[in-house]
Amino acid sequence: MKESIYGLTFEQLSSWLLEHGHKKGRAEKVWDWLYQKRVTDFSEMIDVNKECVQLLADHYVIQTLSEHVKQESADGTIKFLFKLMDGNLIETVLMRHKYGLSVCVTTQVGCNIGCSFCASGLIKKSRDLSSGEIVEQIMNVQLHLDKAGQDEKVSHIVVMGIGEPFDNFENMVNFLEVVKDQKGLAIAPRHITVSTSGLADKIYKFTDLKLQVNLAISLHAPNNELRTRIMKINRAIPLEKLMPAIHYYVEKSNRRITLEYILLKDVNDQIEHAKQLAELIGDTRAYVNLIPYNPVDEHSQYQRSEEESILAFYDVLKKNGINCGIRIEHGTDIDAACGQLRSKQMKKAQ
Image (cartoon, rainbow, N blue to C red; front, side, top):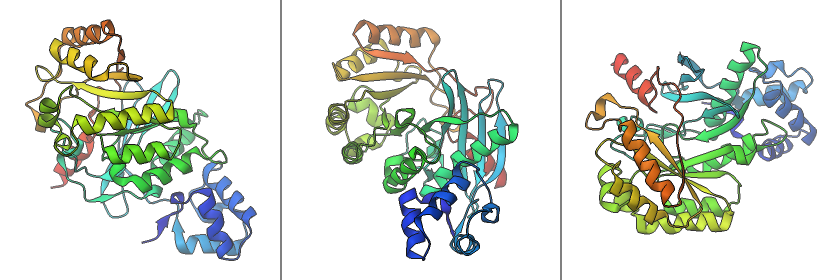
């Protein structure tokens, strides 16, 4: 199976073409056709040497994803279910914000982290996505926007879809290098956020790469006992290991970190939990993103927190000097929970 051309950074493409007897300038032309003109077939690269075009076609493909299902929300959110060349399904979401268009990408087929409230982990990981398959999610969304004829461009990226990004570290980093490239999509690093469930060793590694990309941690509990109950990753990486990694990122990158906290009714949404969370964070340069829960049929033990509880939780954090907010919801009239659309489609196919 040929690899996706989108998996190559500009430097990798340049080196590959040089190794095969082509000038570096051809890499610039190919890059322009891929990311500026956004062709879907190598034969469309009309000002690129024919031998070079054939070489590319012999070794790479441009399209490895096909649209399987598309759900559009009244608020403009679009959830895409893409089929990969091996038949696996992944989700990608386009969200409209006042500040621009954001795309949430998937990094793995399935997820092994096993958070007990999450639809993404209902189906175990079968493989990592290649960096090209991750980039192509952005390209397919951009092609959808191009066809709509509204001259809109993807401006923000969140790596928060199905899978644990830091469990696919090398491909995820390669993806970031491609989408940040100023000659291509030119997504500013400050407009990219990567989310992890808390793989502490990879947080240190990510920090040392100095990518200037935002980092978010799926925290969801203020103490080890509760976090272990709802997130099994905490057994291997408890808060005593996670918090120093968080502090390292903040200190070394000089950037604020986002702590994601899904509010589960009568589980982690009590006043005592808010006080514990405020104490855990202390004076760390952090932003707490409080997230109303999207119920998942298979996790019926969890319910959405009442609005009164959410506001009370928020008030406690604010009174304790914690920078926080309540996430604005998108796509609530479609399969809003991450992994939900994929899970439903796979059930239908059984």
